[in-house]
Length: 95
Length: 155
Image 1 (cartoon, helix red, strand yellow):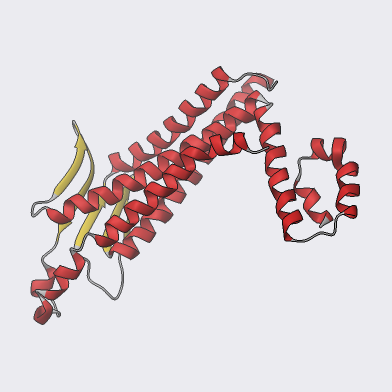
Image 2 (cartoon, chains in turn orange, red):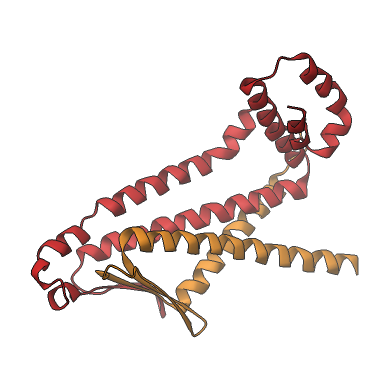
């Protein structure tokens, strides 16, 4: 039972960490949208998140599709997991 | 100044806290000592994390995620930079998957800024903001990649 609880906690922690990282990426995209004056549309499971400057018309329209959103989440998760697995396997006690 | 001692890990404070408190009492204080204490706390945390396999893996996981986010941000700005030069819509995809599309609009020739039709696009199609963003992101990525090595060097 303890092992199952630990495994579920680990998975939840990983998902939360990836979600926080993705929120950070979204923050960066909002910043870029403002700086580069883009019209940005992000598709998330059939819902659309649109961002643009009110006072300026956009020259570039950027659309991030569902596959991009999911791919970004999976890439972030994979990078985190890969780095953790690498460190876990190569860890040595500090002398 | 003693408040900065609370930045140290609890296990470290239990072992060396009293000694360090005495030492801080004897020093005149100032920005230099405060900075020393903050760097010392970072080193103490590094030792605690490096000494525990699970914590070390968790730290590496967070580091990997931060690197992934920065790489994706660099990819996004690069896509904008490439799309800005292209007349046709720019698609980013792999096999059957379509990740992103960038379309250039001709709004400026139709909208209320018709008189500035030649001037405004020239401002918008400048690659300088994208290049500045790319440079900043690349610098952040370099700092992030070098951070573990820099932390290991701290004594």
